[in-house]
Image 1 (cartoon, rainbow, N blue to C red):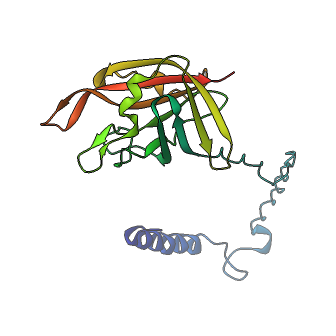
Image 2: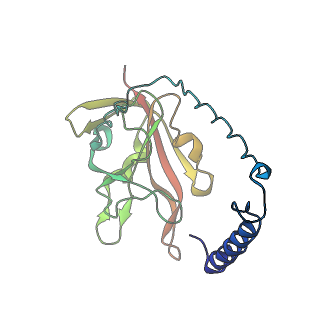
Length: 217
């Protein structure tokens, strides 16, 4: 949009230009200029040729969008008698993974792969306990051993099976986030809960208990 000052200036310039053009116009016959002395009108320039645009035309239909993988809804770990419903979760304002308040419910990190994806690590986490609800099913996660089985059922009723490879205590500040939340590479299921000593002041545990499992067979 043209500003008012610019508009007024343009209008004044148009008036001045029109005055100058009137003063410099060829005189009409009878104004003192002989007929033969009248200026010859300039030749009209030939119009520029129209550019020819030769661009191949492609179909306007957008490519098909792949259907999202079915989300996990339940995880079962028979060796520690743990079965939990699974909810999709995201990220909190401080950048940490959201975890359901109820320790009997696990959260699946929905920005990463689903359990059973062909590559990357699917992350599932739950609180170890709650002041209101008590101890959760993953309180015994540290008891898992290599070779124990874990199953995850998705929203379509399909079950993915995994075999535990490692179980570790890791200080919270040293959790290898890039490794456990990898979106590419070898497929894995990473299960995380709290462990170690409890700090009453911060209401948090010093460590994480992490079980890493790989697809069975």
